[in-house]
Image (cartoon, rainbow, N blue to C red; front, side, top):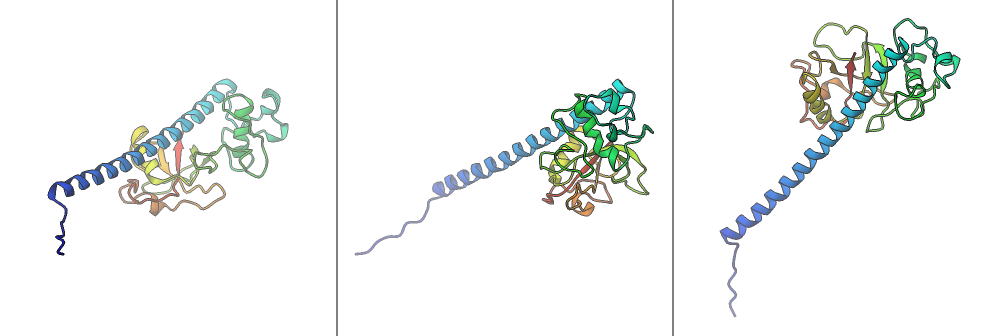
Length: 222
């Protein structure tokens, strides 16, 4: 008995291709929504910390971490965790005590208590569980020459490059090295430092959003 083999018709193939297209479109749209949500989350966190920094400065006429009267003017701040009052949040005690001063003064959520060794109890973390940093230093990218010391907020590492690229487009100049106040930073937060060449183009300053790099970080200059 002879059986005739029958292939797919053009209509059937077209239907399959449409279904595949819809599935791929849904996946890509879902990834886009996830990235946008991550960008908003990080942007909100940065805005909150910046508002706390300037609010503290306005109230106490001093910088958090550097405030030399924090032990007497802020409840539950130990006298051993005050700064020298020179107007710079320096590495070490001051850059860790920032969060102790801000949280006990009521400017940020949570309670962070100073300890000489940084941890998640002394310092807030970004949405990827890497520690942030507020400091007066030059660990940020410039297009040419050497970066000068400036107060800045480090986002911490472990941030996908596409998130920083989108964040930069939304709030700044879209350049990871020179224009605007958001720059690439190799701050490691005790882990693996981001590699500049994996995160932005040193020639153009553009973020390498299509590289898929998962360990990038930035500094927001004040």
